[in-house]
Image 1 (cartoon, rainbow, N blue to C red):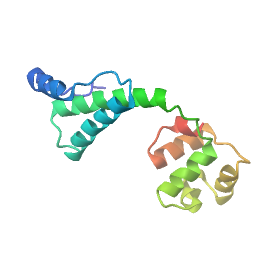
Image 2: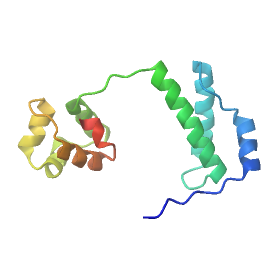
Image 3: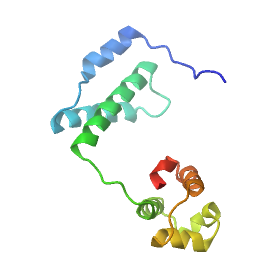
Image 4: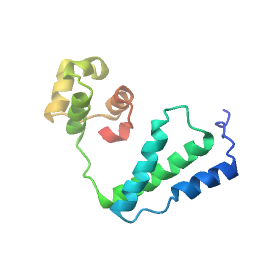
Length: 138
């Protein structure tokens, strides 16, 4: 198995981007908003259009914001049935979309009503279906 390709970053270009963005560990909501604005500017360029230096900066800024927001806005973990219902709603899907994923109408109904939990195998299938970590369903 080969290692993933590492993009070569031009230190001078990256240094200029860092000087402009001045990323720091986020301590205030104002600093968080400032970094979110920088993230939005980078994302507006579109996927695949960022230079390696911009991509590295986007990764750094995203991690700084995620760290702050995780501390500032701790969230309770949703139970599997609530998460599945939310994901279906957000994607404009009905529970019937999960029949082929989970095997039957009855199984989907039991999970969504809370009378049945999600197995590890079902969590893997749900993770693949919704493109998120299977751990979210356990």
